[in-house]
Length: 471
Image 1: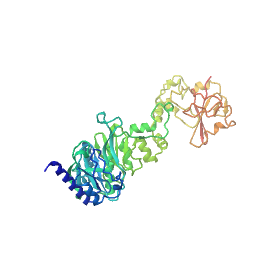
Image 2: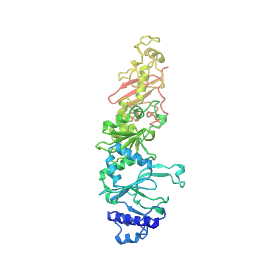
Image 3: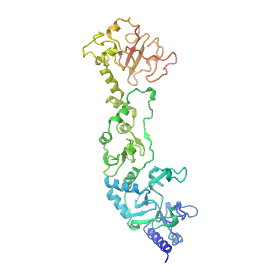
Image 4: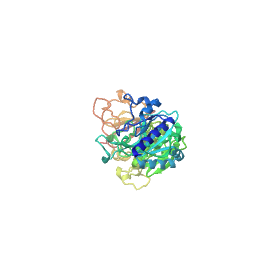
């Protein structure tokens, strides 16, 4: 007997046994497209009901292939042998080895391009043709200019099974059974299925969208040093971000670290540093994070500790010493006296007292001189100021004619209200917000940057920082 009749007979036998095992068996079209056979122009009816025995007898014998429509029994396809090997390795390392072995032993086919598992999951709510892991195609893999993505792991709606052969696959290669049979397909729970799918998603190599603050500070308005979030990213490890919030480091493969979410005792839920990115990438939808987006350490901290409020997160990190204020304060405390033209404590032009440094100029709320970074301007000594004509106050001890006044206070204190009342601040040319070049009022020009002398005058809610030029 020729080989072809033997193959036809084996396909017929496999189709019969699969049907008896309760699978929704449909033959593939024998044109290499891997599509299921349509009836009256469609195969959608087989997504909800099995073909009848009479219809089965019209299909077999005589076909060179068989397949199943996914439902309670569904195929999991690995379309890259290296990815399959890494999947098995990671499953073993993260507490999923026994589950993976049970499924693999229950039913495994070698396909022309990889490996196919079958499992049975009662009550599953499937997504159609779910792609779990993909990567961009290399140029030598593309069949046409729009053929840009290669599937690595997926849950197809229709899967061709061994011993299908010949023209059912575009390569002409056969499907080969490696272990198990239709009667030994492993039954898994929905939780076990979800855990395996999270593991599969960890192999996705497509570009990922990074979660960032909704409003970024324009580059031209930033200070020279790091923002609190940037500083936090540079100084903090992922263990310091995740472990206090219940995440468990489970496994490393190369430079990629695998993490498990709180409340879970096996499997993985996220990775860090995929592709050397130093980003956190969650796969699970059962966490505070949006699945399949990436997060910096600062973004993850904002989600875990401030419910995604980036402004609150940055403010808290600033209070903890992250960001520009560290470098600015260090500059104030370490700058030697001669750079300021005189000793701010005793007033002498030459002072050798080591205690008379700019640490004496730390900010206070009692009328003391404020030390600011040298890029704003120079400082003068108290003795030099004493020789100047007294400034003319518009508001006593608070706002000076010909000078600059800065209002500072908590949100809602009324800072924006003060300059809108002419009786409160007469003779004001213009007000601007910090970091903006546009005046708050349309009349007049923007305020000039203070030249050098900065004083403070506290009020109950608002601090007023006033400066004027010496003549």
